[in-house]
Length: 186
Figure 1 (cartoon, rainbow, N blue to C red):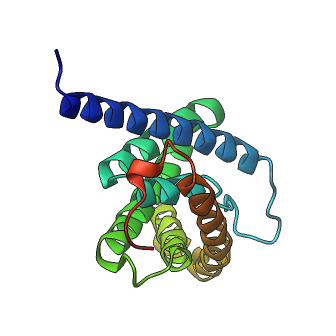
Figure 2 (figure 1 turned 45 degrees about the horizontal axis):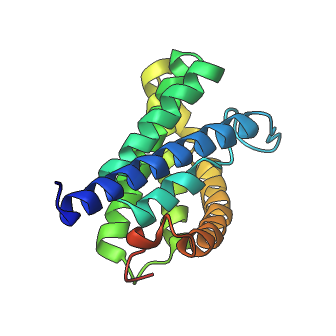
């Protein structure tokens, strides 16, 4: 007969898997919705970053590797539904840059940096990753002329994404599925 510790570990692993699957599905849906929202005043290809709500929420509740799995799932599935290889490359590099920065800030800044602040830095990092992908695809550094408006857009969208994450985290923290994963600080 399995011990209660083994049952608890299995139960937590199952809960974590369910959470990652739900967050991935929501992130894909948000990515698809976002693809229909034009930003006529912004740089070509700029997006709101709605799926980052789920990435930052995942970082809040789970480990970095879980959020990384979410990013891979979201990027691959969304690219298969909507895009081309270059769209995948832009999205993937942006997501990786954003993830690395947000994960680092969550590790070193937990309790000192707000979710909104982490989201803002993540939004700016996402845009830097996309510009890096653009340089690779178009083989020109002139792409970095887009950096100032993209940074401004990253700050603005990062604020709104961070506010959304704050409310999502508050709501999910009250749910029994998330109880074992609520951190002590924030």
